[in-house]
Image (cartoon, rainbow, N blue to C red; front, side, top):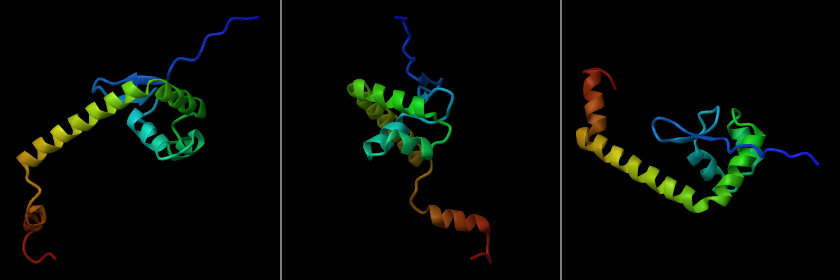
Length: 110
């Protein structure tokens, strides 16, 4: 019997701290959300053609084995997103944005 090496988990963390499927721009967040909505690996690959079926299945398996870590990572991402959004809204409040954008167009434009 020959020894075999299991495939490595196809995940990589970028400089921004975002975990993506190796060789793609598809985030772990995206795969988790699709899987949690009930999408199969095949459906996820159909939605994100840069993913291979092997990578999708391997990522889903890893997600299932490490669900606590994945949920903690996703919660951290939501917190970071919320902080960035709050900072952006503080710098440029969303209230009155339509009026500000229309004002930029100048008079005579609908």
